[in-house]
Length: 171
Image 1 (cartoon, rainbow, N blue to C red):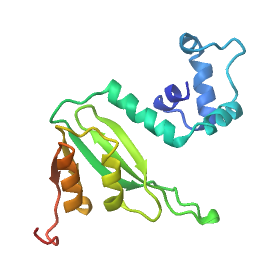
Image 2 (tube, rainbow, N blue to C red):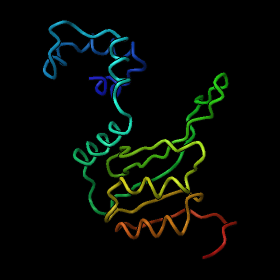
Image 3 (cartoon, one colour):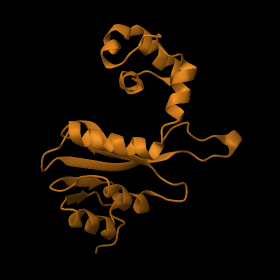
Image 4 (cartoon, rainbow, N blue to C red):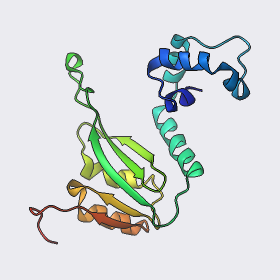
């Protein structure tokens, strides 16, 4: 139910609770709310028990089942730093993520958080392991234009189209 709320643009635990209250009649078909809607504290407690790795795996499988892309779909892979994610008081750096976007479906089909010691160049090959890229065209920005990444895409049956800059050495 929390996913329904988040997809519908709910923000935070209270936003999820508000969504459930507003859409109670619709949501009854998906669950038993005999005791009413859970409060936002309960929602937060339940969601915090979910393993992020298992949830990520389930999300990727769900995307594959719902949106199996055809050959020659273009998958754009790019890394981003999330705005306002730096926590100065706890000395935590900004959060960096890599996303795979299916241009055919206008949908993010996968996303990983990179390790603070990592970067796109080392994380993309691992990210490719969880994506079905056979028959797909993979695009990346100039930073990810690396021989190792190109070889990995080819080994998995995909094609690649890389952006390059004038300052990059020819292979």
